Length: 73
Ligand code: FES
Image 1 (cartoon, helix red, strand yellow):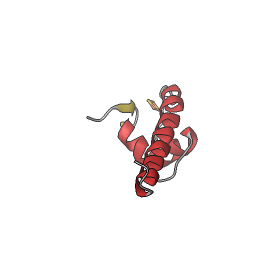
Image 2 (cartoon, helix red, strand yellow):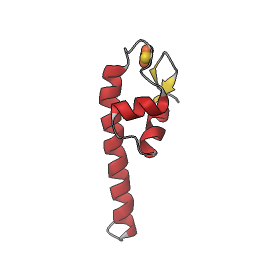
Image 3 (tube, protein in one colour):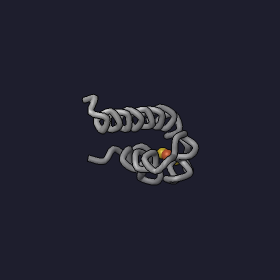
Image 4 (cartoon, protein in one colour):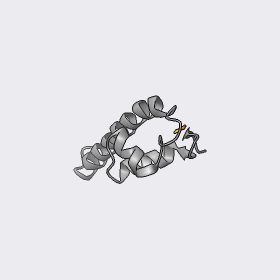
């Protein structure tokens, strides 16, 4: 299921997550990478909440993978 965040351009949470996985770490850089937020701007408050959450999620995932490789979990 794709959850649309930016309705002007049909940008989904999955699109935002892909941008974060490719190195975008701020709402501004994710917006630049995906095109989200370039229209009516009504999605900006959502992007300001969702992008940091996705960055945190990616960091936790990377840490889990790192710990797994070290045999800690
Ligand atoms: S909903 Fe994102 S720019 Fe309009």
